[in-house]
Length: 316
Image (cartoon, rainbow, N blue to C red; front, top):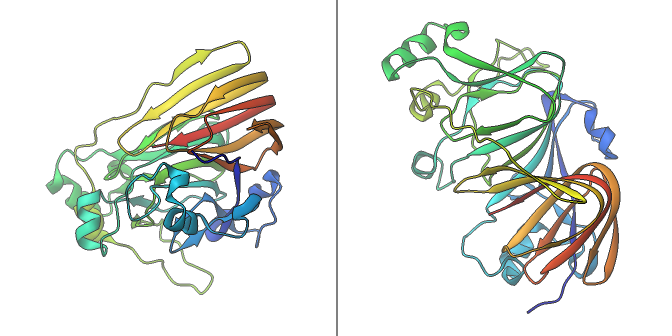
């Protein structure tokens, strides 16, 4: 069994038409005031997060997946299964849908589909987001899209800070302006844009839409598949199980004090969304703070979290 510590990653930043500068609050140096996404754990051809400590420093997550599969318990697969992001939606995102595995594999050069989920880190008062459609069948869906009946078609739900939203592939969705989320998803970058509020880019052009692919990918009627969080309160930690599905399991840990925990998965991904403290792995102590992202690989069997910290934890 390998004996290794925590592996910290440097994120990749993506500028977006709807992005802002809220990610600076995590201590990041942003490329611009239109930074929409922080790819915290990414091993994709559109972005690779880079190891910033230890013997693998300078290597990408994709490098580790390809050449050091023992760090992931030697699990199978041609690509790392997850992509974890922080999204700063200063303005409304386009209304979009992600395809399922079967459709994506057939129509997008063997890409996987994209099921995702959001932990709402911040939002405006009385915020909403788009989740699902009101169409009862494909015929009604197509007619409403073709005639631009967006207000009737799109289903909205209220959200507040601390909410969790599950977005299975095939679900129409959109974040509204003023929303900051941590997103865990399948490792795919396939998005079909259904509607973009007739916005124009800096050159005056409308952004590309993918109407026919959207129609094919959207599942109707919409079925609510939200998970009810399961809260477990212990002496120095509140563990909240947010979701367990075919592609990922996600927890929120709220630590106040000192807690020893076990690691019995192929790997675990941690994103610190608030606070600071210490992480101890194999007698090595790491200072950790809001904005840090680290992985505990296979071979780490236990770890200690200490301080006042909130973390989102994900694994397969």
